Length: 160
Image (cartoon, rainbow, N blue to C red):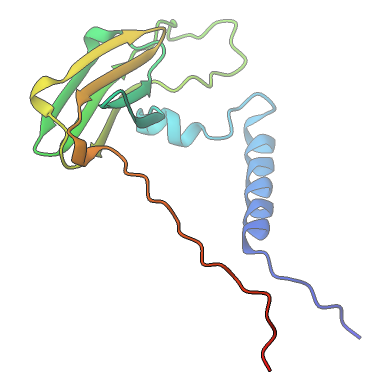
């Protein structure tokens, strides 16, 4: 009798990914970066971002270590905030002494939709320790609202 097993498609995909990684490792050698095609040929990367509200302000944090703040462009069009820039290499083209290079280089661009009620005329940006912080005042309608969940009491009486 055959054993029934739950089909897990993502597990199957991870197996395929591992086999592809092994194939690239065998072809390019032990020290080849596994995702070199995405980084080296495209020449772009995407910084991770955090978006939240604090003290009646809408705050965006973008992790862009190694990027010169003078190479960052911040613009607002309607309710879209766009942050773009470039991380340039300070490594010689020969890359002497490197076994492999995993740092993402090149241009990046992220666009986010701002919530209703954010005052984009009073935008402020700072850069510290590789983190770009963009803040904008938020009106009351743009701030999160708490909703209380009301619970109905359950009676312990049995139906007759």
